[in-house]
Amino acid sequence: MFSFNLTKCSDYSMLPSEYERHVSCNAIHRVQMMYNRHWLVYFCLYWMLLRRHFCCRALEAAGMMLKDMQRIPEAIQYIERASMMYVENGTPDTAALALDRAGKLIESQDLAKAVDLYQKAASVFENEDRLRQAVEMLGKSSRLLVRQHKLDEAAVSIQKEKNMYKEIENYPTCFKKTSAQVLVHLHRNDFVAADKCVRESYSLPGFSGSEDCIALEQLLQGYDEQDEDQVHRVCNSPLFKYMDNDYAKLSISLRVPGGGKKKKAPAADAAEGGAGAGEADEDEYAGGLC
Image (tube, one colour):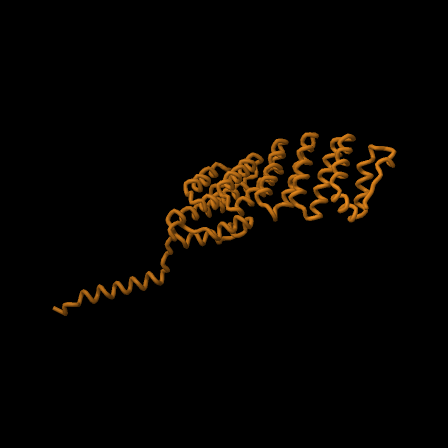
């Protein structure tokens, strides 16, 4: 069985790193250690007596070991506890990164939990005025909300992203977030909110007359007029087709209310016009020549 004699360490300040080296040398030892829960708790408490930061590391390491054993929900609990202690210990950046890693671990199993973890990471970064990192976490959260079809929450999350990008003066990305907002609102059947997003974006430097602006105006016009052809053409343009995958799916699946209407092809219009003229000629000479 796995064993590690604490009394053999003459310098207890070196205990955490020595234990880490000892456990890492053999994967089997790591598995055995995780099955001995009492031993793990004892060691975490021992680390806490030495330095509080080492306890954070112990909890996160335990979470990663549980991940290796495919016990993901338990792993997330350990990493969340570690992140809370990182914040209390004055290392919020490490806490946010731990939450980001936890979100990636759980994403394939529990989207709602992943959203919660990314939002917590964003909040930690925002409190530290690290808006670039915060908005990256919010972006992950927004996409997962769209994937879950939680469009009301997604709309709020994307607006937060847009505000942060505006604050750091990343205006081209603000344009892209406006496009994402419009797609989300139209899927919510809220044309007024979609139109408002575009109107508010006119205040962004460079938006008016941009490719994004023109495409969104055409999309809203087609949607409002129930012109299915125009909506389909805009949504299948490269501007929308090459968005993040979750938003690209929204553009492909967008339908105008009531099924919409398709414009008739010019050839069909001409054919109908010719047929109408022929009928008029027949009516004119129906009574014979005078």
